[in-house]
Image 1 (cartoon, rainbow, N blue to C red):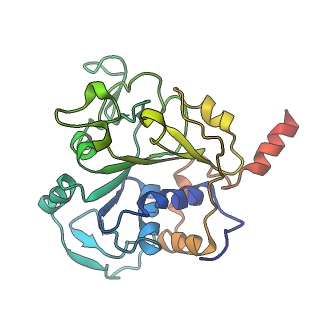
Image 2 (cartoon, rainbow, N blue to C red):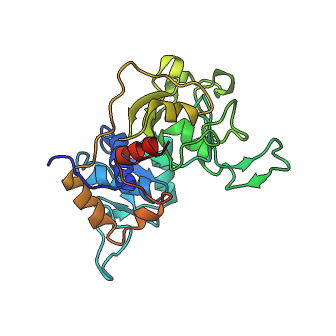
Length: 277
């Protein structure tokens, strides 16, 4: 691959970082819930893991990812075969799937909430999707998390208001499950990359996006996280990766997924803020 790019956006940095979640998966069904996770899986598929498979979100299994915008009318898709719900569930239950999802809340155990907000499940303050397939998915296959706005409102103190998915909480393990059976991979946020491989499956900081400090991550996380002695900077996307991303999203819909979509390297912004202070 070519050298790291000099000019890239935060969305593009997060897509490249998210692609790493799928690097060692081999031939599994990759599911990106939302545009940036889908582009991340597509980038992995187009570069270092060509064995990945994806659906067209309707009924076909793809060996070549569809563009998310600007597709030429009538252009055929590289579909392998028909893939209805029964085959999807066969993949889910056999563990041959890796989904990158976007929870509204995540707690210290890696449990996630996409259902409702508030103290009472019967009368929530905010009603969302409901748990949908999250319980069965989280006990059956790998999941990674995408968080577009890292804050203590997402990474909550205590447990999620509604526990929609399994995590590393011994008190909530299904019968016959052990903590090592749970498979939560990477957490990609607008501040950093994390995983759950700290002591006792504690959330661990893996890398900081350029221009972001450890203090910013800690202040915006509602519980204690593992901080290794040496924390690298999240690698910038390469020119080759940017070309692929831009070909998959020629209308630049990715820019609308993050507030203001700042530069991927926010070091200059941080310096200006320091001068202003």
